[in-house]
Length: 328
Image (cartoon, rainbow, N blue to C red; front, top):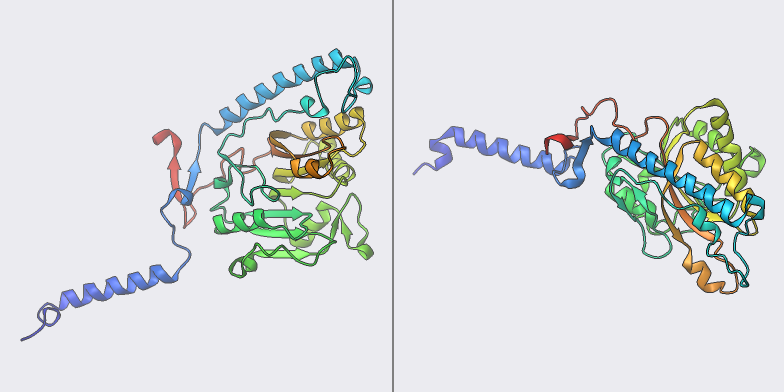
């Protein structure tokens, strides 16, 4: 007796098409996965949320000035960590620099719990971004943050720099290493090629980049000189900084309040707004006699049109689902 497929040739064709389609879907990585993280969001209310956050931040700046007048009255009169004696002023240096800007997206902490993770604003905004670029400076064989961002994203590429080690940390699996690029270079305020020391601008030119989505820096107190040299030209010219988000560990280590304030206000003038902070309690636990001089800060760049504060010009990417917040 003839089989069903013999009696109905159209079934054979249909089964064949289904099998071919299934094999294609299993073999390609360019098709969207229809989970939450595959969504590329068109967000018409984003500009207004950023504007409201900036209003709140400006209000905080007025409070900072009043706090300086109260305990100063000038910045030169402020101690970073007041001595344990009368009148016991109720502040430390960090109270003058709260993360008063509201991230307009979700906030999460990719990477290891404890040392390694970084508070990040709007990771969903780059999970499907076709030209996602991340720079990580100061690795020390701890790459859990980079590993999770790579796992969560389809296109992100990570460039790592650290002159004290010879690779990323072991947290990045072999399957993701093709999207990583490591060099034993030092990030600094000047180029010294014979010592593998370069500015951020030079590193970007080497890589053919004009923009970085997330810049992560931990360079053991060299952040002051490096960022000062890096950012001042942008402040002078009025150009937006070439990165959307900055993850930075700050090492005060003997800085005077007035010096730190001047440096911090330069960051603010360039458009950087802190949305999260975390004291380095691991360091503090092993240095109990020292002041709490280390803190992690996460900044959003509100100038320009980076992916965290503005929608891209077009959402018509072949592997993206467009989701309108106002239509939900």
